[in-house]
Image (cartoon, rainbow, N blue to C red; front, side, top):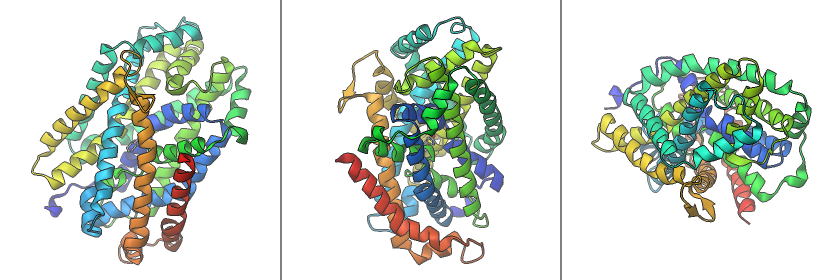
Length: 442
Ligand code: PHE
């Protein structure tokens, strides 16, 4: 069975697919609004800190578990650890499910916005009208649900095709294009009159705005953005041949993901200030602010359409990785075929996405005092660091020195920082993550 497992076509292909998983709505939609709502520069600094001290090491830890076991998250923890450890894998599969359920809702919005850009309906509007159109659209009921369903169908279609061709080929083509477009849009945004205030907000920390909740959001964002703590990288790593070295790939993935998030901040926050919009507007920030920017720039219709199309594709490669975690689990562990697993999981996940979509104004669906979508997102911000903490303990202590053998493929691959990596997994990550989670809760 293991011999028949599909492999990535190349190391570059794997890196682009993993970067495709990491770079998504988390970077371009979530990061700017979280930064806006959490005091700007201070949030940026905390986010970067968490990426450097835990993120990179944990990405590598997950890849090691995947490559060494050639299994889904549950199977990987069972094979390498046994006992209660597969529970960490189950937690990951569950978390992936929750994320995907609200992810398709936001991704569906990007589809609608491609349409709004094409028909030019936002182009002559004021910022207030653009804001009102967003509110009207997301609370509209049926349309957003249908679009989430279509997006889910597109995700399922890619996953049905398997690992290599669909995901890998698309990522290799689309990631560089996305990056180029971001640069063009940033150049426009930072040259707007009044943009300086936004740049200052983004770069200069205001520590008076930082609370326990800010710190928890920053760690949640770091994990979410890196696709970390739920087994996505275990899953993608499980399709790596043993001969592929990993530390360099992990560094590139982390670098690309962080760069896109920071660039998205430079694209959106200056524009928010230039048009005197509220940086703490929350999830709607991207869908209100960017159309304002597009309505002002020459050929804004074209840029706007292409931007939302690319955001759609970035979201697609991330959603594919989320579904792939569930599908790889089902295919490895149950008699289901890839086809049955992808269709079944896609359908159930869409079902969970419906209340998320409706909770945006159409129907009052509250959980823990939050609308359903926000509650799902908040739960994610908690579950991912917990998954990461347990993964660090597993690799650092349960595997221990064996992890050094696995990461270097029994000494065949060089990794000069191996001992630093293990030290981080043993001490820095568990203590740091636990401290942040506890201080955020009390
Ligand atoms: N990293 C993705 C993003 O930033 C979201 C994601 C989380 C994807 C976890 C896979 C696993 O949009």
